[in-house]
Image (cartoon, rainbow, N blue to C red; front, side, top):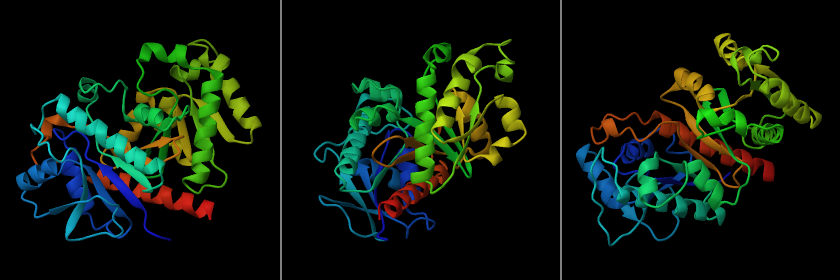
Length: 335
């Protein structure tokens, strides 16, 4: 099987994105697994390489690389006649412009099947908004670019996979947003992804309740009875192996997640808090439902440590590893 070509976007160049990209691409754990290309500003890469005293060379490319190079990093150089103002730790419209453009370029290359997948370094939502991009996050932006109506986030840490029913949504809007159709649709997405992207023939999925104690038979909320349980029945009729809804505290407290291939949480923090407690430095964000492969480190821009050279690249390395595995699994199925 040929090595996949993966674009790595630089993210917000005032955050830790460039640092974890530089450290991650040089990791021996993944050098032989794929062919990387960075999409972003060479000036930003050189700025951080110099600040960390890394002896790394960069090569601007106009065509897609066909091999890994230990001598230099291939860079699709954005705005080659414009030198950005790089200020670590500062939110800026310019950084948002570069970050948004990198996402657009990488996604278009994936859509045209010129490259096999993309890994996105962290962006600042505020900087992205200043630049005119009106999306809650990269997930929603990529869904729009790819014309994908049904997508969700799956967070991965080792063997724990957590899907989200609602993503970047205020907590007081979650209950009103949940519906039988939404949950059943996302369960189908996750089931299909587990088979196609992770090579699991007969996946088992656990569903969490929304309320404390999963509602206690309607005594502490009735969303489980009126919405979640009917959605589970719909998915089961499609042949999907699903259990739940489970009270989330007991489910994670008893390590019941080990009995399942994926867990569906009802809202962002319900799924992400336990996942990050178990694997903060290795978490990966995978977008389920896109026609392209996209992963990302499961952390933010970390403006407080940007430019200090102390950012941990482990999550970026795991994101690249995950992208490679998913791409290769899809290729095996299509052959």
